[in-house]
Amino acid sequence: MSENGIVTKKTGDLMAYSMDDYTSFYIGCSFSFDDALTAAGIEIQNVVKNRNVSMFITNIPCVPVGPFASHMVVSMLPIPKDLVEKSVIISAAYDAVSGAPIHIGDPSVIGIEDINKTDFGEPSDMGDLIPVFWGCGVTSSLVVRSASESGLQKYKRCSLSL
Image (tube, rainbow, N blue to C red; front, side, top):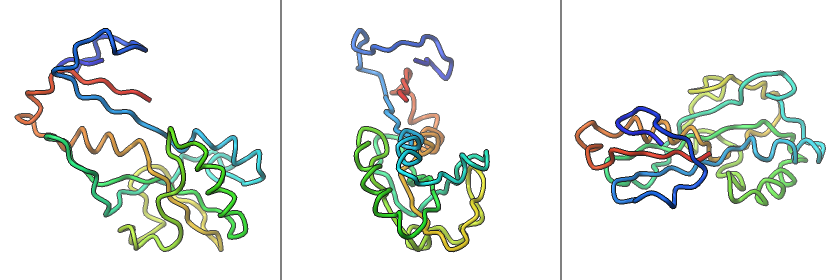
């Protein structure tokens, strides 16, 4: 929990607090299913190469709430064509976090002009692999930064759940 931008307490239970002046963010992460993909024989390139996953700001707007608005950030894993369907089935089982991909294939459809120029993380070696995109928890950082100081006056306390 933070008040006026300063972390004041860490807690696993927010139900004890009045929610009248709270804004909460619940964030999933594609890292949640990395082990399941690996166990199924799908190599996670950024893990094998000890890199940060490739992340991009898309042209997909999030639904604005009060002063909070942004475009969706996605993480991208390059997947062999014959394993794309398997990666979708495996990740879809993790719907409490990122779930199934939001896009597969041509990155320009979601506003990514150059797959080699990430907004966050490190570029992947694409070769003949298919780019597969999942919703990314980094979206919340853009959402929080988007709020103007005046718009945040209503939301003096904020919690972030990962």
